[in-house]
Image (cartoon, rainbow, N blue to C red):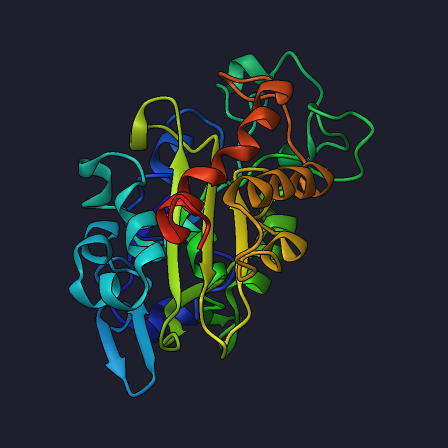
Length: 319
């Protein structure tokens, strides 16, 4: 394994087929346990081009190397994009948030109880898609990897239709975060050489219209310390933007619940009815698997926890 610090943005952007690492809080444990064996690692956490939280007219730019603590504590982010600030503040522990970068959290490895084990433990099994094999250990008949995306911030960024500016193969690109996460999800289910190698520069969020309300909810066994068992991000309340509901930790990438979101602005529909709709829609769209501390059946029971967020945003009477 070769690990080096990028001396300039150009140096980092022009490096081919490497692993970019910001804070390293997700990757270092994987290296230590032999889960990943990346050969070419470039440290980019100190590059100034990847830093900063800046307003530019109607757009807020957040550098990919900004720490989760910076984002959670930013008065600007809290005022303009509360769900993102809440998601960043509910990820992992304070020590990790002080180091972990936004880009790294969005592009973190998907996890599975078969893949995220020691190399010795996994040696007793046939290789899975992520280790270069041809099957999913969780769902042997699946044509692709079913490991779960646990990013809290990805759910919030997708809620706000954020875009990502990034370098790939030395070229600059911009695309919706939802598209980048989807590409990353598919590629992350393959062996290392087939994965996505992009350097995220910044995230771009258009300021929200007047009157919109939004928020984020996460449920895990030990508050923010653990990965989410489920998370939700919700927005509604403006005539200029359609309402939206996004659920995370329910499959290889966050799930947008279009049908349930249509109910958000109908005051005749109660919070309980919307929560039931979310749970039913997510059951159809989720691709859940067995996790360390929870069965699929128990997880499905948690899909209705969006009710807590709905009561916070819409009030107890649903109005």
